[in-house]
Length: 239
Ligand code: GLP
Image (cartoon, rainbow, N blue to C red; front, top):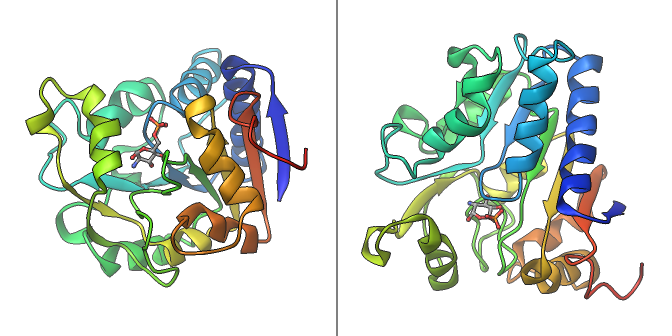
């Protein structure tokens, strides 16, 4: 694993955007795996700004998002489809038919088949949940898991309630790429920011590789770049 600790969220977002842009420049037809949540918002803003300035085109890029809440359509403001439209897709030249979510006919291993047919993911962007989840692969998810419908952990439902008007509106289920699906990406960029992620980051990078901390599997991937800010790095012992 390669680890880069940045001084701030802004520096983290800018660095991540440089890496993603370099991937697209090296291979304009790149297949990207995309994450949602607050962590990649700054990254997407930088990519949108690069596009606006004429420095980056995503016209050849294909995307596969990690996950989506079960039952939320693109019209729902808190769906991940709406999130991507708001933060990235609405600002760049990505072709809508080249963007994919695990919804409709792609709610299970059909999603993995579609990823393979597209040539496999070149670069997967990942956040990490406070409980160590990746995508919506909650603690206890099998390392062999594929794209499937899952129940969300109580902590995840609570963490995500900040985006919904009422706690009762927060979905309890989602469809997520599996851990084996994620591990097939050629390169992975794991991003984390803030003190609330410090414990999960330390367990993922320095703890035992175990299904109770899904992100720990990344220690077994051959090309992972971890980009975190100083707060998220606070619990690491071996910096
Ligand atoms: C959600 C998403 C994950 C994301 C995580 C962290 O549950 N399904 O893909 O990495 O939350 O989110 P945030 O970046 O908002 O902390």
